[in-house]
Image 1 (cartoon, helix red, strand yellow):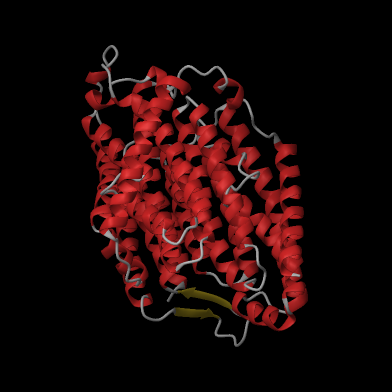
Image 2: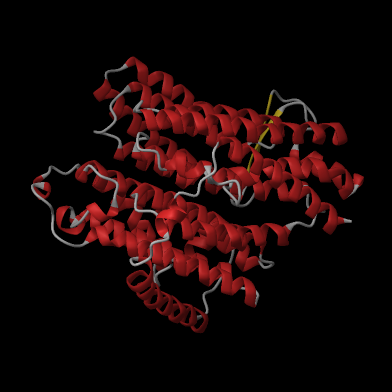
Length: 528
């Protein structure tokens, strides 16, 4: 049964080539809507008991095993929904069969990663997804996009070699590539045998999560000028979540290796550095790209906190981030197409030019900054539950940085339209797509407890007193952020210098080696 969710998008991709461009687009949206329906059904049947499909009916670990539990089914459903929104958004702007073909192949690969429980299958799917994403980054074939696409391809090939060597050691020590059986073998062998494969695999996972110092590839891929806006939205909304998802899964394989505090610390530093770099940017897409780095750090902090509420809050924030960051990238695509610039200082009057896009952008900003009654406030509230003094302060600092970033970002919403911009024809499909996502931002806040219970089966409750306290911290942070932007950021001469900090390809490769060495040393020290 589960093989259907991997194979169906591929068959749709091939089938669409038989029709004209107009028919192709209509069929693509219809087929994607049907896939959403099937994903809802999979989610429903996976809530109480995991659904398992062994392709080939082989015993043991010889076959390809696909498993859909409550976490995997949420990711599959999220994937289908985001791709449906991307398809609606792309209805008029991208009408080539190649675009739709690549989009459905990409969806198939993501779903395959979320369902697979075999190390080597995940490796193959990651490799093919890298090629597909590289092509989509270079889709418009301008010089900058070609460069960014090649860099993305090359550095991913280097990073995935760590994963390949890691699974080689897993097979050497355990005799299997099945994640469940490997976990049982490592439990018998002891943590020492797992140290090297753990460090190798976690280096690749840290790269996919864009953790410090492995994130320099992300702004090049997510913020490149030539990548279609739906591609940037899926990259930041879904593709980046592969790293977090694999981090969760591999923690169960290497559960005897104590590195939780290390990744919590790396998450804090990643979040702080991400917001600093986002603050220095004036390119609308790069601001969003660096804020993704910050949010990945924040989620990693939440996953490192010991407590059920923090864990559930992190899972919910993964979902929320997919929603509001996809909305922000899609809105940015409309704004860039309208104003023919990516510089936030050259964009004014978005609310006047397109009230729907403006209001949707505001709602997405409210979501990512954790504004009360919006989805980000609920997930951040749960993530901070059980956090110590230092971690709580760090999370408040990261959120303050996020507020500063989007106070600067929000300048594009106000002011007057320039020239004839107010008369430009609007694309209703794009507005509908963005508005749907932003409505989720609001609904996810108002009904946060119910949605968490529905998605993850966790009975959580928001304490009125605790939520009121977090609301007070938020408004204090917003006031402080406004003053910092007005009297510090806008007058600083250091922003341009910080903006120039970026690793080249050799630096990215060196950072992979450094990260691997640090993970190996830290895990060896704390485990022994």
